[in-house]
Length: 267
Image 1: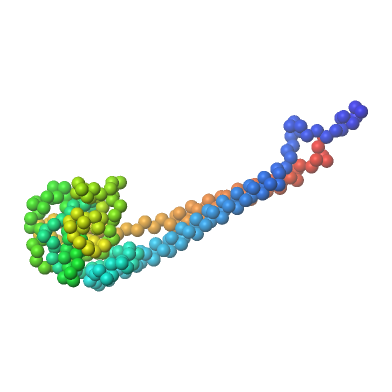
Image 2: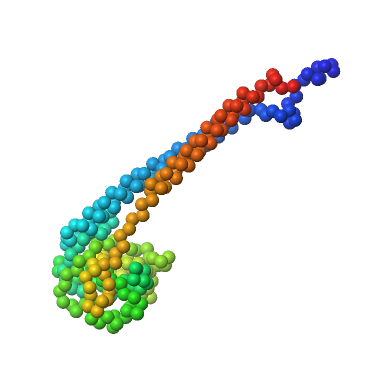
């Protein structure tokens, strides 16, 4: 009896050996690794696709900037206008500015902080479009300080870029039409405030043609596309490789753990 008690297997915590992990626990961990690798890889592929799309967009915009100016789209074309196909298109439109009316929109430019001067322009084709005549500093916000540049009502030709409306405000603030505080160039809201019916759903950024007296200053459109998609893709693929490496180490460790655990050798 005494000898049998001495040879009885002992599996207490002091024997220095561990039982292998359960089958379901291993499968669950392997599934988590697989999901991680697949998920990070999918995000990397998505960023590569976004990069292709962004490069194509940059190329199309570059072609528009180099193209010959065309007439401003009229009402029949308005429903089809969109940023991907039309923004930054070179335009030339003839007509007259309406009654010297204007709206100031807060702006930050290479010339400092100030305002965009948005003015309604009645085209010879019979529709009205808002024109961003350019930038003025705070001390020139009053039209009386730039009388020479005020539209005279004479027929003129405006050259510039087609820009899409900006309806969501800016500078982390919403537009306040009632108080005449504008932080983005919301075409519909500004047109309504100026009582301009059926204004074009876009506006025109005037080019750098000098205005009498020097203000407003046009041609300050900033065209920049952030294209960090390759960096993002490398990051996601790197994370996928890290998870894959961790999975390989885990599988090798579990295999070694199982081989070293033999119940018939425990005493």
